[in-house]
Amino acid sequence: MKVGVTLEDEKGLLGNVAQHFGQCKYFFLANIEDNKIKDSSVVPNTVAHGGGGCVVVGELLKYKVTHIIAGSMGLNAQNKLAQAGVKIFGYSGRVNDAIDELLKGKLGGLEACREHGGECH
Image (tube, one colour):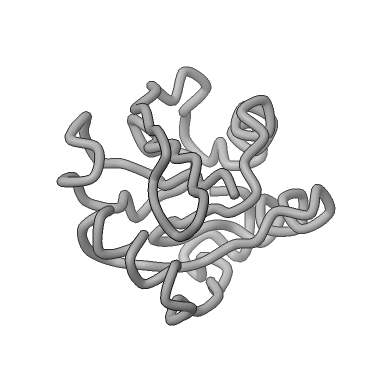
């Protein structure tokens, strides 16, 4: 599986999951095989802008992610990811903990951002 996680900074596994999908500054990308990270990278979110979640979806799909972990995400972005077959999970905390919870099957889904009326975020 290829996991994309919203990042607040460039700290990778030691960083925090960003709460705003479309406005995060970076993404942590990890290839996971046999429940272990095979390789990973931190990439900048070059298309981030206010309410830009739907634009970010296309950017992430370029990396062929199969799973996304974010703090929050608008309904339109969630729908576009779901249509592409990407599984979406919500988490607040450190990236390494989010990945551990994902691998243990303990992460839940993600509600649409209420403050944006479910718009892209």
